[in-house]
Figure 1 (spheres, rainbow, N blue to C red):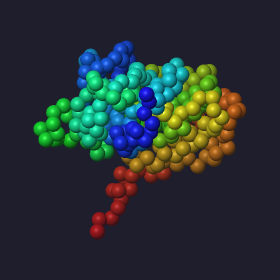
Figure 2: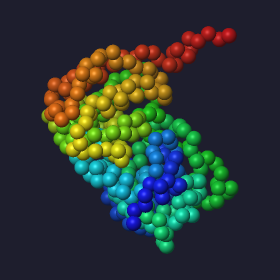
Figure 3: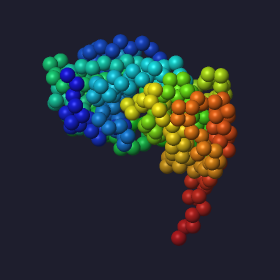
Figure 4: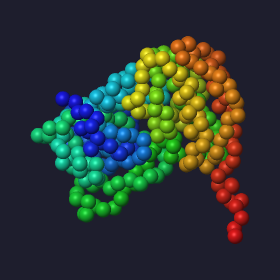
Length: 313
């Protein structure tokens, strides 16, 4: 039986925020996964995120939440697996756990997931771990022993575009990442009617890449050493009428004013406000328009330089 939102809220509320290989999702998880620490943030509701380590010493991230929510996210991920820039989830399963165990996870006392004899149905989603980013946010200690014996806080990076400290000399790399995000959202909408509907920077991860280019249908984009990964499909839809450019406008704005970046950007070009997709087929020239808009993004000011210019009284 799936739990209603009200039944799971006491366990999953207010908790938020790789190399490819085959993962055999099975329980109990201690047979193949060692949980390391709880990752807290500000975006994800109704679930717990843990950093884990497979026995093959490959780091992963696992989400624990309502089975219906995570099953939906995994299913949409499968629809997107052949599109560039979307996360490839390893696997998804549900199992039974105990009230004490879930309460312990929320409060940072790590025991294990999927406890034999539990009565609460939970979902588990396994995904790659991306290590590129700065260590930020307040993270809660999670240890395999009692907290008083392992009380050193462990700070975990939110490895993504939000926490990356973009510098002035990296403007071209940032523009290239922006193009990847926009092109991938446009192409997925064009092909299957995908709309993300959860636009914030916490859903854009980064990793370094040796790929020289990516193809979005007939559109080829040259890369600049960085690869963007879009994740979190809980609010996403496929085949529902909507405007993909709403997502694009919002993400470009958020990146331009990111608080962790050293550069504050601006894009005075108003053409993006006139791009409306709805049910209209996205045209090749629309990619060219977005490409040109991003090329014309400019640095408004560099935060570190402004700070140096402040008078000392």
